[in-house]
Length: 305
Image 1: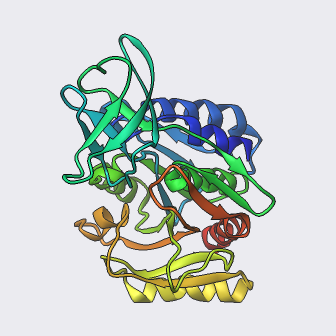
Image 2: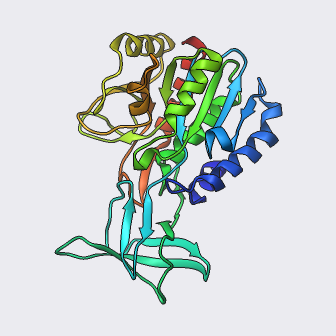
Image 3: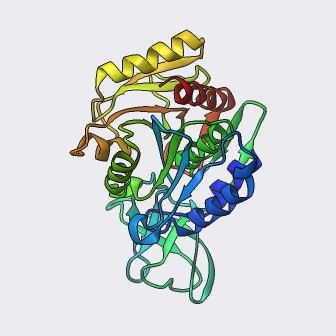
């Protein structure tokens, strides 16, 4: 879990993914040559900004995993504006950095108006991004930290990469705050490699129908509806391999799939990910058996799709 801990500790709120991208570039350049199929690294700031593609062999399917996290932006004075949809509670520790130095401050939620602010020994410069302070906790059965959504999706994709022979892993940006990078990644992938089927490596929720410890989730729908024929192929592969999994049906929520769904390219997609509790808080928690289930399911799907 050391790699996952490192990923969770790297601040990368939506719009500021560059530090995490640099880490991944260095990681793949160091470890990629020893993988079963060393990937082609596609990183061009002019075309893809802070996104990164790993291309293996003759790809048929692409994994999309977003790099960014939720967070906060300092407005004026002590005001904060959320990045994405963080859960908020007075007392949460926030960290960041401006030109005056490192910042460790406290989130304050005004009871009546729910306005957000911070407590700190000085004013923080306008425009500074703040993220949850990382307290990574591991037990025999669980992992708990801020930003398992979606550093766990990134981690799982890197585990799959070690044995992947044919496929694409696309690390995207801005998902937590509306998306926007997937359309140009999807068009490049489609036009360059002819790939038009995707798996969304993201983290979903523990709900009344999805339980921690029961395996990775195959989502039948959230606020969007994937093509059922494609989803049934994925379910059939999971059943044939005897891999533990559970099904999700939700009315709300979304992912990088929203840009694929609205694309003028005929992409098929399915959200496949481990469930977590304490979503979008500093205390997101995932069962280890669900993490292992996610890696095993992705490995099998990328081989068979």
